[in-house]
Picture 1: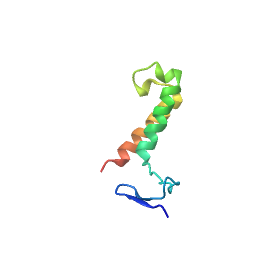
Picture 2: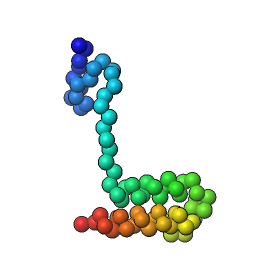
Picture 3: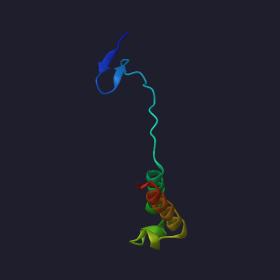
Amino acid sequence: MNETHDTDRGPTNGGMARAAVQRVEDGMLRAYRLWFEHARRCDGCKQVKRAQDGCEDGRTLWGTYRLARIEGTP
């Protein structure tokens, strides 16, 4: 067996596939990502400087992010 050890990643098998690592995204970051992805693609949201002035969907996504941010503060 051709096994090498990398101090950061653990054992590797000569370039064979490694186990997938599941990334956990908290609610606030997920809400921000969804708003950001929407705002990049939406013509109504691209034309304004404030998220509160965007389209209805953009405002809803921004509101969801704000609530998640408030709930996440200790």
